[in-house]
Length: 216
Image (spheres, rainbow, N blue to C red):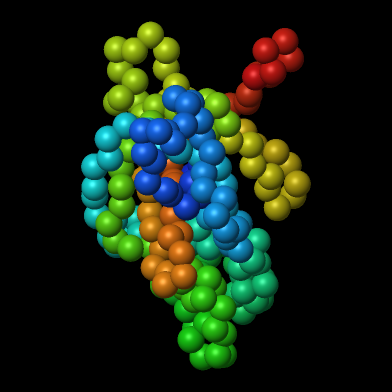
């Protein structure tokens, strides 16, 4: 049974470079550009999107979801996140965080004189246009969208994401990859790109069986 659509971060891309034929990496090389290190960790992963990209616009609620997801997966933003949680009621829920955190984060950046260029870029959020890919190579494994994988001998659109709840219990979510989105953050210093997977998720409450032989 499929659940609602959501967005999850893949292990992302480092700064892109133009690859000439002589310098083109091996077919399954997923090494990024190491000309400098990005400080914000979410932009500092290795991976490579594959195929021909198209473009789309992300607006409204989808943009808020993407922006909030990026912020909440940056350890550098954790002090701001903790402050935001403390400013809410005694029992803040995830819906309040999803709805308000990205907008709230702009306030301390704007009014406290914080001038770290990367923290400022994160407050602006991604550009509204995004690249759309059908494949992504991560750790020598190629993920395909469901649509691109139709009719192929192997299906590489399945995902498994373990999560830890507030009570330290583990929940494993299984889903299908429907879209690979590459978003770019505004920055005058360097190219900051982040790749997100748009997925549908199954209901994990019915239980999960583990196979120790195949480690699944």
